[in-house]
Image 1 (cartoon, rainbow, N blue to C red):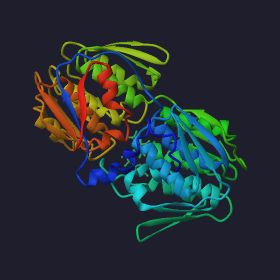
Image 2: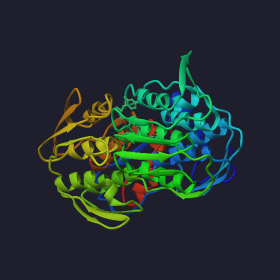
Image 3: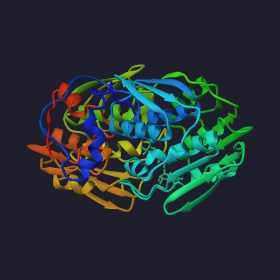
Image 4: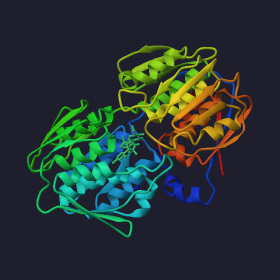
Length: 443
Ligand code: UD1
């Protein structure tokens, strides 16, 4: 991976962040509660789109460009995956230029799959391009067990065979993958994407029933269609893909990150401030904004931006996480941070991940009154949280604890911030620009 021009957006230290994390030398974020956040903040491209769009580039030899790419740790890890496969990546500001060779090394090693589970999305593209794939089998991660059986089921029905030996999944297909009519057991984002990526170069038509409808999947389909693919119905439950013989490189602008946008929305809400969030279509965050309105926020929606004004004290709200257009599981911890000091009792149901409530213990250190039972959390709002040292377990949990600190009494230090770096570029700088009293400290 070429790093010559990356220094500002993807600082070199991020490449070592996992190691630093393992050594316990991770940096901390210190936030002093009480400041009311006001002003404007712009979000960058969606992490959950750009990672797949980087992999989509492997589908066509030549020089590709992605613009609006966030300088986050997960993008650098995916850059290393592409590098291992044989592509070279170069950043110019928020533009990523990737040169894809004719011949690929169809492999994703354990250290990269461990560092970022989303690396397994290379499976479909590698099988489609080379007929082979050797990918370390992903175990569980911070959010729970997270199997990939539905990815493999779809690829099998398209003619691939898999063996699992010594922790490495080897896939092969004789000739081209074959189009198939597929019924997903659940609208899984990753299984839908892996199948689309495999099907664009397959022989014949693939139909994915019960497909995931996330906006990031539509954005991936737009990129692939511009490359010459024939994908119809992305954003609906039925996606039809007519396989083509080859694709060509394109320039693609990554859709705005609704999760980054939603996080800044909660920052405004939790401090009773007024924040304008730019570069994100509020329709992609409609359930989350609706629930923030139920909690007492006022929201004004524009085309590619929105303004949110927080109440003096939020009201309790019940919600359940679901695939799009339901409430996003990756916004659940931030919303719970808000509800922890709301008036009344909220019931939160987590339908996606078995370990997503792990951060609640840290929130309880700050005085939150939350009981969890299986996938339910009962959040009894307390008048104020109280700042203290806490630990980030994953990207969104880390962001949520910082948000809780914004409204807490005294100061909060959040450790293991490399988790936050996985999904947010300059989180501290953006919150500070809105008026937060926040700084990053060496570990
Ligand atoms: C993606 C997002 C993640 C988000 C999630 C749900 C990326 C990089 N990550 O993850 O941030 O939280 O969508 O919106 O885009 N499952 C299986 N078998 C499978 C596949 C999934 O049992 O083969 C289960 C998962 O364990 C989970 C649920 O299905 O409980 C949904 O997972 P999925 O939609 O596939 O999420 P990801 O694509 O992994």
